[in-house]
Length: 188
Image (tube, rainbow, N blue to C red):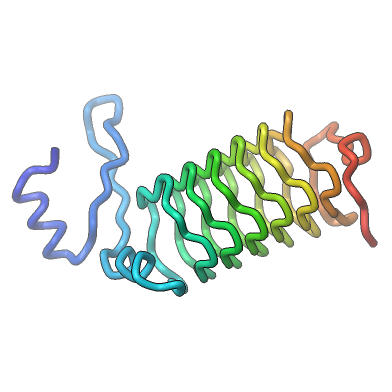
């Protein structure tokens, strides 16, 4: 639990402190997101360039939200519904999106490096030039996604459903990965 003085200090700084767990020696790891941006996210459909790093948005319904250029690094969006949202250029590095609904989401230019997308539904999502290096896409549905110029090098694609996903010669895959055997469609 956060002590009263630490809570007052966090409040006086204008930051909402989000506990992320205890480390090896019992030291707490803190990640900050602004209360104003958290309120903006909950109260409107637009939250451009919002600072939501480390926010706990587990299971939230965030359909059709405009979150372009927002910082959601390390955020917990597991089980969240973001269908139809605009996350162009967003930073989702290290975010937990396991089981999230990301159908028809615009993630072009987004940073999803190291993100957990295990079991996520990305059907018809736009991942144009997205960074998915080291992302866990095991069991994810990526049917009919746009992967033009996306970086999937180092991504875990075991058991991912990539049928009909579109890629180009500039799309980078993990070593040994064959998009043809996954029934993906190469476009010029």
